[in-house]
Length: 85
Image 1: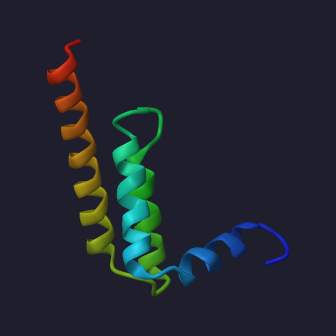
Image 2 (image 1 turned 90 degrees about the horizontal axis):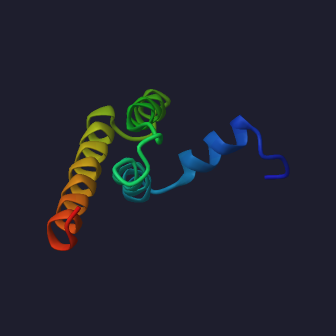
């Protein structure tokens, strides 16, 4: 990969194992709870886009983002409950 364009990024993401791809999608969704301007909806759309290109499943992408978002929200709740607001 000599140039980092959109095509190179998509090729790189397409070469990732599915477990790593879904973990990245979930981690980005979990980070939305810490940094709200990070849009998890676009992560779902991006995962579905990759599924349409033949890499993974749209349902699995939605599930990974949902699980990541719930885990992030529960983590923030636990921190708030433990240390107060």
